[in-house]
Amino acid sequence: MAAPADKFSRLAALRPTRPQTHRPPPLREPSEEDTLARLLGAGVSKNGFGEHLAVRNWFSTPEHTIPTPLALDVLSRTRDESLSRRTRAALSDPEKWLFLDTETTGLAGGTGTYAFLIGLAWWDAGGLQVEQLFMRDFGEEHSILCELAARIAERPVLVTFNGKTFDWPLLQSRFTMTRSIPVPKIAAHLDLLHPARALWKLRLGSVRLVELERHVLDPARLGWHREDDVISSLIPQYYFDYLRGGPPEPLTGIARHNQLDLRGLAALYGKIDGLLAAQAGVHEEADSRDLFGLSKFLRRKGEPERAHSACAQALDFGLPAEFRPRAQRELAQLAKQKGEHARAAELWQEIVSDPQDGAHACEQLAIYYERRAKDLSRAVEFAKLALINLRRARVQSRDRTAGANIASAEQKFMKRITRLQLRMNGSKKSSSEISMDEPSFLS
Image (cartoon, rainbow, N blue to C red; front, top):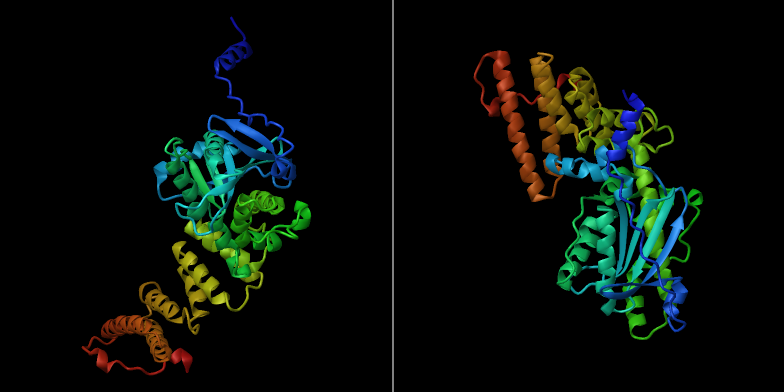
C-alpha cells in the first residue's frame, strides 16, 4: 500500500502547472540617427502593426507593496456583488495588477486626442518594473496599442489615478478608432483618486498626485524627487513641437514625469493599503484630519466598526475646531447604528448650537427623548430649539432655494411639536398656538 506522502505527490504531479509570466519581447538597438531613442535610453519594439519606442526600468523597494486582503476587500467593495465575485480572483493576485498612466496630446480628451506615451508598471521580482511605450509619430499608434493590449491580457487589473475619468476612456476610444485592435477586457479598475480624496482632502485641499507625494508620501524614503519636473499643461505643446521638427530634448522630461507618476502611484497604493489594513488603535502617527477622512471612507464602504474607531481617534488626537462638529455628527450616527442610543444623544447635545448641524442634532435628540427616553417635554424642547435655529438661518440666508428648504423643515418641526404637545396635554391645539418660549435648558 502506497504511503500517504506518495499519494499526495502523485496528485500534485497531476495539477496543471502555473503559466509562466510573459516577458516583453526583446528590444532592438536604435539607429544612430534616432536621437530621441538615444536620449530616452529606449529600444525599438516591433510587432505586427509596426514599431515604437520602449523604455524599460526596474526599481527596488519601497514602491513594492504586496496588497493586504483586508485593504483589497475594502477598496474593491461594490454594490454589484456578482461583479465583486468575478473580479476577486484577479484582485487577490498582485501579479495581475497593472499600473497605468498616459501622456496625451490634449488634457480635455476627445476623439482627436492621442496617448503618445503609455506608461505601465507592475510588481516583479521584489520591485517595480516600469515600461513606457512611446510613439514617434501618429503612425505608430497601432503598434503601442497592440503592445498595451498584450500587457492587459496578462495583468487585467488596472490601477490608475483619475484613470476611470480620463486615461481609460481615452484609450478605449483610441482602440475603437483603430478598427483592428479590440478594446482589451479588464477584470477590475482601481482608481486611487477616490480613496485619496476621501483620506487627504480635508488636510491638503488639493489631492493632485504631486501634492500627495510631497505631503503624504515620504520623498526621502522613496529616494526620488520632482525638482525641475515638466509642467503638465506644456506636455502637449512639447510633443507637437517635436513632430514639427523641434528639439527632442524636452521629451526626456515628459518621460521622467511619467515614470515618477507611475512610481508615485505604486507608492500611494502602499500608503492607502497601510491605512486600510491597520487595525484599531494603530494610527498613532496619523494626522487627525486624515483619520476623520478615513472614517468617512470606511463608513461608505460598509465598515461601521472601523469607521467608528477612526472617527473617535480623530477627535481624541485634537481634530481642528472647524471639523469637530462634523466628526461628532459622524460619531453620533455610527453610535446610533450600533444601538448605543444614549451615547449618540450625548454626542448630539455637544453640537446643538452648531450653525451647520445644530438643527439636525436637535431633531435626533427630539426623536431620542420621544422614543427611547420617553421624556416628551425634553423632546418638545429640542424640537423648539431646532425651530429657533432654522428661523435664524432662514433670516440670514440669501439663497432662495436654501430658504425654501429651511421653510419646509420648519413646517416639519411645527408638526412634530404639535403632535408632541397633543400627547402631553391631551388637548387640541393648532400650530399657530404653539408656545415658542425659550427651551428650559437654555434658561
